[in-house]
Length: 312
Length: 184
Image 1 (cartoon, rainbow over the protein chains, first blue to last red):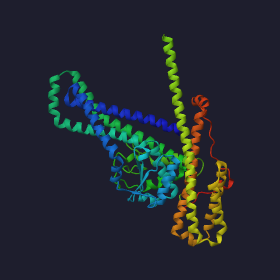
Image 2 (image 1 turned 90 degrees about the vertical axis):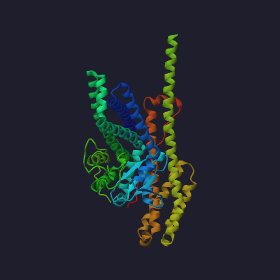
Image 3 (image 1 turned 135 degrees about the vertical axis):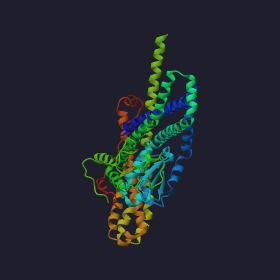
Image 4 (image 1 turned 30 degrees about the horizontal axis):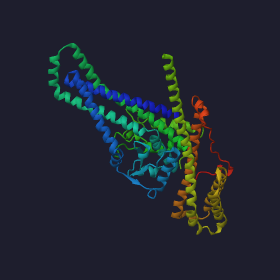
């Protein structure tokens, strides 16, 4: 378990480095395509870095509160929702987190839950009223443990970083493509001046890169996100010592998903217990979450021989 | 001259390696100590909760004076217990007494329906859960620490630096082992 977390940290660092390299390459390619000179390639990389910095700053500063506000979450105290608060506190103790996370409720009939906060001191857990209504205590415990697992494994931090980098790449690709459409004429003129087949080949390579980079970045990002879901499920099993609780909860939640009922920010979607943007049960390489059936199967495997109990 | 530099380089690398492993072990040991302290926090919370519980229950369960007195006595003993061994026994006795009360509650429908009692019951069962999760977290941290100091390469540092194996928390009392989780 600990080894899995360590290995995951290394993989995530690698992922972010790769994404950052893609972003720089992307900036260079666009700079070259639009300006037609090597110097403009460096300028493009610089612009890419600036976009990344601004996005990161926005996310770091107001991250949690913006996300929570956009989901219409209201903070609750122990007296407002004693059982939920107690369950969160129990799981905080099991996860040995240093501080009690803030607890939020979202008034929405769709059962779901998510965690945000870049470190364990700033952690927030939010659940929908639909989740509270449908789940028993054991199941709620499994879900909360999964969310605290995300925080304990630092998924919130890594996925925010990765999400911001991916966002910058996509943004840059979008802007670049648009500029090439109405700025195409000037580009052709400048490339004509330089002439030579080598430039043309470089141009084509840069164009291919500009088109492929966002795609590759997405694939990487989603693969990493799915891996982290499995890890958070394993953490949940470690904290509760009762994987069937989460398995039952996943089954209930998946059967109730009506996509896009809660306002969802794409950057947070990996933090939800079940991806609110995807249709239930679907699997694709562009999914932040692994298929629910597979998650349930792995959870029940952890449970061992014990047959899945019927939920209370 | 060159051999001296090589020697010094190797020495520096060894010292750095020793320091990094030593620091890692200190972190893990602090983790264990903190996890142990967390158990006490939760046990103390249970002690604080009991007077409230007894106050609520007293009016309904006039005939159960024996059960209530047993809880008061077990609480007093647990609070004045000295040393982990004695505390462990006293806390186990307290758990048993509280469990006895919860079983008896079944015979008092009025009490069971009371909002005040329901809220207290959630608090009490949650506190019981918190105690066992704190113990579980302690055992997890001890397991991690113990396996670290027993395996290569950290064992080469742990021995000379005086990192000794920690004991896992185990239930000594068969009665406590039998206490089921409160169902909802």
